[in-house]
Image 1 (tube, rainbow, N blue to C red):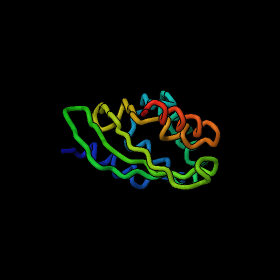
Image 2: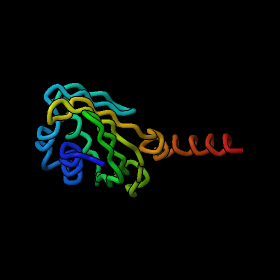
Image 3: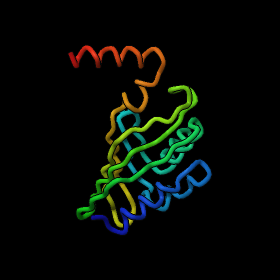
Length: 142
């Protein structure tokens, strides 16, 4: 169950790329607070810079939205991010499941918090560090 604000967020993320980052201002408030397990950003200008840097370093980045729920001024969006980075997993596609909590002020998002496994996103795909993490995972499973 979603609403028009959540649908607009999803539609924007489905087409977002390094060529159309101006679309961020269509969905985010000027005073947006964005956070994920690796970054924290305040303000639309800084968020735009964050996304510009993110997209400049990847070969591909796209989101498959599997579900969305809206309650009052909050929305929860469940997704899988598919990305390819030249320095991770030899540029092969990596899939990471996660979800976002969005808080709306009027028609714009004022708070965006992403939840995902940072190890699945990054650490497991760094050559030496990834091997160490896999070794630890295997030991913990014994």
